[in-house]
Image 1 (tube, helix red, strand yellow):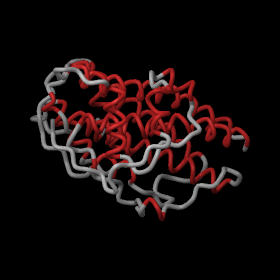
Image 2 (image 1 turned 120 degrees about the vertical axis):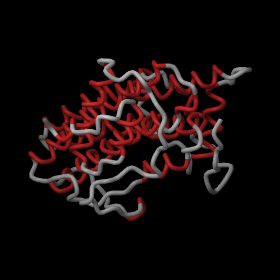
Image 3 (image 1 turned 180 degrees about the horizontal axis):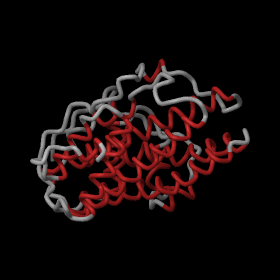
Image 4 (image 1 turned 180 degrees about the vertical axis):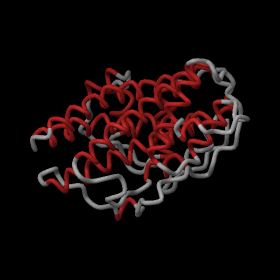
Length: 290
């Protein structure tokens, strides 16, 4: 049996297992434990969500050299082998963080009294993020490198930490703004690898992109759910604009991948009005739990 199965027998809830994954520093083990938990949940071997205290920050691989976002190395345009390796490495890092962000959004907001469909949705996403990590990590090794070979930054977690007090804020910034931006930039990344003759990596990223469209759709779905659940209900697009102004530094920047955003349900009225808006505050505001 693999290490991913050697969890304490007393762990019996989705949240307890998710916490163990967040506290797992080894990236490969984090991904394999994720798939094990996905199986336990989908087979309904585990049926209880449970409640635990989310960590202030997930444990990270010990071999990573982490720098501030402003000091992170430039990835270049993929014109050289090293720049393509750096770009592939950054995608591995994003997917590793995506695993943690998905489990975090499951356990941090259990007080929101969410339906089982919410947990089913994010467990599916966790499985796909772990799959993406494995695809890209294996590809990086095939190309003669490995996760940890380049400096990284934790900008995604910075956004998660600033929205830790509100599920509405977390969905808006992490899963609609940042993941929406991912949809925008991916076609260019695919083109860079294809232009360099690396069809294998380009095809992998294309498969991942299709999954990521559904991830943005899920973020938007649950954002709308929260707005419509309120009495009286609130207009989701108006609330989204407010959240972006409060928690996102700067404006949303074109070009936008309209086709993929439309497929996710994030049509232009969600984001075009935010292109020229200025933030109301210099620093993100702390949102209290709702």
